[in-house]
Every structure is written in C-alpha cells, then in structure tokens.
Length: 160
Length: 182
Image (cartoon, rainbow over all chains, first blue to last red; front, side, top):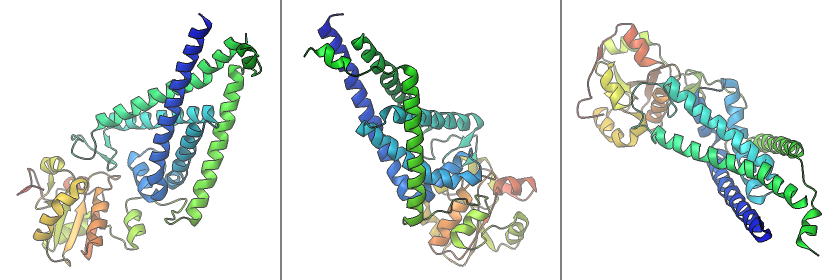
C-alpha cells in the first residue's frame, strides 16, 4: 500500500470513528435527560420489564440515566472513549436481550403484562424497538472495534 | 521532521493494555454515575426512595397514601348490589376476548381518546369505580385508578390481577366488543 493510500485509509477510519462517537454519544445524552428529570417514570418502565428484583428498581432508575449521560459525554468529548464505547456496547446488549427475553415469554413491556394479543395498538410496534436496538448494537460494536483494534493496529503498523 | 518519525513518538498500546485502560474507564464512569445519581436524588426536585415496595398493593398506596386495592370477593359484593362500575383497563382486543360482564372498556394506553365517553357514562364522581387489568404485574389497572382519582373520582378501587381472579371464581363474564367502542 502506498503511503498516501495508507493515509487515506487512516482518514476514513478516523472519520467513521468520529461520526459514530458523536452519533452514539448524542443519542445517549438525549436518552438520559428525561430519565434524569423524571426517575419515577423511568422506574416504572424498568418495573414493566419484569427482570430486576423490586429492591433494585429504584437504584437502577437513579443511576442508569447518569451512566448514560456520562457515557454520552465521554464519547462526544473523546475522553475515556474506549471504556465508554465498551460500556455502551455492553448496555445495549443488556437492553436488546431484555427485549428479546420479554418478547419470547410474551410480556408487554408497555404495561408489564403478559398477553397473547397483538401489541401494535399499545405504544410503538415491537419491530421498531428491535430495529432500533439492533442498529445501535451494530453501531456501538463497530465503534468499539475501531477504537480497540483498528486504531491500535494502525499505530502498531505506523510505528513498525 | 518526517511524518513517520512524529508518529513513532506515540508508543503503541497492546490489546491487553487497551483492555485494562477500558476497564478503568468503565469503573470510573460507573463511580461517577452512582455518585451523581445519589447526590442528584438527594437534592433534586423529584426524590425517589432508594428501595421501594413495587408490589401491586403498595404502588397506589405510595402514590396516594390510600389503600386502593380491593379483594375480588368485596368487588363481587359491589357487583351483586350494582353499587360499582367496573372498568377494564386493557386493550379493546383483550376486552373482546373476555371481560367482567357489564364492565366498561377504557384502555389506559389510549385513555385520552376514550375518557370523554367515560365521563358521559359515569357522570357522578362519587360512584364506586373498580378498575382491573390481568396478571399480577400488569400496572394498567392501577395507572387507570390513579388517573381517575386525579381527575376527581372519589371512590376508585383496583382489583389486582382482576380478570384472572374474577373469571377463575366463576363470577359473571362476557365476551365481545364494547357497545359503542371502548
């Protein structure tokens, strides 16, 4: 690979990293704000997932939004971005698996009730949640790979 | 100075070093989040108890200070004496599959669209209103009860897991869509 082509490759990789960092970071910050303002409402959402024991619901509702805020800010600011990307990816896996688990056992996450009826009339359709969570999972996975492996190997290549 | 020599000044990190770096960053972010969450909760506008009783009976009590849950047998007595209006908080589909005979369908998920019709059917705010959903963990019945109480109904009660416990006891049930829609 010529030196200019190598530089071009590095540039594209860095650009994708930047876009993913800002996009995911912005989304995490945005998602955290209303939960921070109304933790009771968020606690109710956590309860409706019927996964955490009751004793942990309020604690999760108080801490998780702040974690999302700091993760978002870290990604946007590029400070501790590797750890933030890893944590985002882990969190998104948790959200995704919680969604799958409840879909499989037939629990409506909008009300915390088990039902066989179609959920389309009650809140956004589940397909939308799956599409959203899958996209975010992929985006955060790519970002994590870029930050942890690709950019690291670039430096290794460059210094060799 | 050549470009390559500038880059060489940055030592490359091994994958394991980056893993440790990431772990430290995650730990730091977690500590920050725990601290911020607890401090903001202590001094913020909407304080939440760190541990709360999320049982179906405790939730409406925590919100109103009043025990709004009624046993199904007591609800059945009100049904027999025709003193109470029963309100099904589930969707129209589930209502059609089976509901307490004579119950009004007021789907909580779409409550704004149907609350006007409910006012017309139950104009007396002192009427005993008994809401229900299905399943121990379903919160629609309580949510609806709290809403009705907020908007002025003075005698609102909830039967936890209402549809299941009512139908299992062989109390009167019906099927089909609500008259005039939910």
